[in-house]
Amino acid sequence: MQLYEILLLGAALSVDAFAAGMSDAASCPHMSQSRCAFIALTFGLFQFLMPLLGYFCGTAFTSVVIAIAPYLSFTLLAVIGGKAVIDRQRGGALMRRLHKKSHLGAGKILLQGVATGLDALAVGVALLAQDSAGNLPVPVVLCSALIGAVTLALTGLAVRLGKAAGSRFEDGAQFWGGAVLVIIGCKLLLEGVL
Image (cartoon, rainbow, N blue to C red; front, side, top):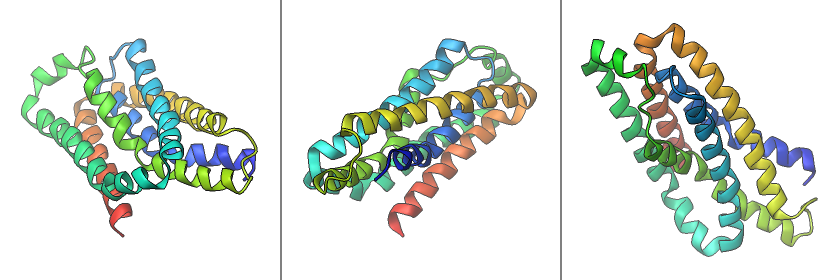
């Protein structure tokens, strides 16, 4: 495994975090810069930690989590996204006023970080296999750091794009942001089941 492959792995793992971060920001276009940074840092941190967890726990623990990961990811994202869709449908003018301030709580962001980071557990097991064969170009902590840094950078970009789109399409952004989270959850479930 080459260094560029680890960077590509980081980009591939960050796709779900990118979409979730963009939908978060689109549904709350007036959120503070610190909240935007918190979203990117959360997703980057989980993409850094999950491969390490998979690596150090090895196949015994990880196989159990991997078996339930699609269902867990789907449940977390469907609940968060479904609630956003329902809140938007019920809200009208009240929701537009609430969107002037970010109401995306830390708990929701952390749950999204877990849900989008679960697939990185399997990557940790793959890194263990590569390391055992002597094929890692750098220590596993640096591999995970690179994966986390790529996710941090791409999610940071996604949040900026989401804020710009949300400001223009604020009325429908919460609905579509929630729908995107549900779709990501369905995608993760289908990938895990098929």
